[in-house]
Structures are given as structure tokens and as C-alpha cells.
Length: 353
Image 1 (cartoon, rainbow, N blue to C red):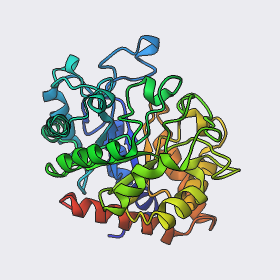
Image 2: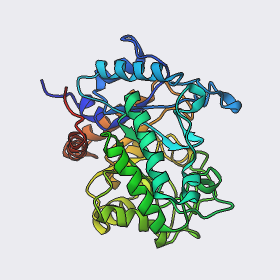
Image 3: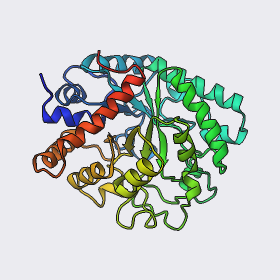
């Protein structure tokens, strides 16, 4: 039986959800079955329930055994193998933390300061093994942003490996290969480079016009040329030198011209969560999806965590269906992205059951 339009669009969606189990009557189970979702994303902290104190364990993660049980439940619900994703960069920018019983790891920045290929390999293999045992097959890492030091958000959060592109390239390749050994997809971020940003795209529009340089793009360029990158996440930062009208994730010039045509990237392009205020404060859902699809985004990470909306996933899918029904987006455009996602999954042994 052919997929409905909603099920076609659902194959472009990675959905965030509330709950530490996925029972048959849960909303995420319903969405997986109804829309044939591409995947899900797991968080440890629910930003609304956790409040200002960011209370741990308020979202999807409680313990290693619970996470393994959750990922198994999710896979059993879906007719195709799901992409089960997470942000596991290292240190505080990780969801599987030692407070839940997972193996403690250090930050990507600390690994960068050590600058030891042997230690990077140990760090990466340990992380990949933890993800593998947890049933997670997509890690939104490594961060390829340059370290601009004091006054920049990525550096302050210890998410930047180095100010030297060559160091980032060498160690990111070790990180990626360690994950590949466990059939875990990695995602390089945040194209075209977010290291110079002083603001946070979670909280509002972040302008890097006066700080971004071509040097920021070198790690992406070199790793693409070496065929190391399977997926790339595009940031929501704005740079009027690169596009005078739109932030990166909505920009045809940045995604199609720069990333696809100039750098020759043929893999899956993923958007950072469009509920981040850099986007949601300035565009409605239909505008966002129209611009992102026109720009060249393939896979949408809808974390639904900054402000939780129980109808976010169906509303997003209905928005894209409306764009197709009106002729503003062609069905073939959706199918092009689905083909890329299917090839990615096939390359990692993640496909139909």
C-alpha cells in the first residue's frame, strides 16, 4: 500500500517527545505509526518541566536500562527502523550523563586541549559504545565550529575543539570513524560555522556578519572532500555577507550553492531545531518549512523542547502537506530528500525490518 501524503512527509521528521517509555497508546507511538516518522530525538531535561534549575531526568532519560528499553519499544512500534538520535558531544553537552549511570566523559573542548589522537580515539570509542548499547544510531556530533575564545557561546559551553581547523579535521575524523565502527551515524555541525557567535540561536536571532570568515568553513570543506561526512547540520545564524535576507537554515545560497554546489556535499542536510527562537520568533511553521525545503534541507529535527506543544508534530506535517497541496512544494522535492535519507540508512545497515 503506497504511503499517504502525511506518511511521505513524516519520513523527513525527527520528533522530540515526552516520556521515558513508549507505550502503544502514547502520543509518540501514535505519531510513529500514523506518520511513518524518520526518527526521534532523546533529551534528558525537559526545559519546561525542568524549569530554571534544568532539573535532570525530566524528559526521556533515567538510566541505561530504561533508555535501552525505550529505544527497543520505539523500534518495535515502527514499520521501518527509526533513526534514534541524541546530542552526545561530550561533557555538559551530552544527554547520557554519569548522574543517570552512564560512563562519565569529558567535553569536546577538553579533548581539544589535550590534543592527543590516542585520547580522542579512546573518548570517541567509549562514547560510540555507550550509544550502541543504548540503541541510539544517530549522534548530532561532532562540532566543527572554531574556538573563538572569550565572549563566544560555543567556546563558553566547551563545545569547540580548537581554533586550528587542521586540528579539528584530524580529531573529528577519529570521532566519526569510531562511530562508524558501531554503525552510528554522525552529524557535523553547525554549518557554515557558528564558532564566532556571541549570541545563542536558542534565544533569538544571532548575527555573525562581522565575525564569520571563510576559515570557519575549512573543517566542513576538507572533511567533505575526504568523503567523511554523511550528514551536516545547518545553524540558524545570520550573515548578511552570505545571504542578506535569510539565516543559514533558510538560505538557498548557503545550503544549495555553498554546501551542495561549491563544497560538493551529497549527503543529508539537517536543520537545527526550527522551534529555536532565531526562527520561531520570525517565521510561522508554513513559512519555515517552505523556505527550508526551497533552501535544500532534507531532514527536520523537531525537538519540541524549548516550548512543548503536544500538536507540534501533526501541525508541522500538515504545514508541509498544505504546501504540497497548493503546489508551492512539489511532491518530487520531498521524494528527493527521502531517497537521500534511505541511502544514508542503507549505508549504515538501518533500513526496512
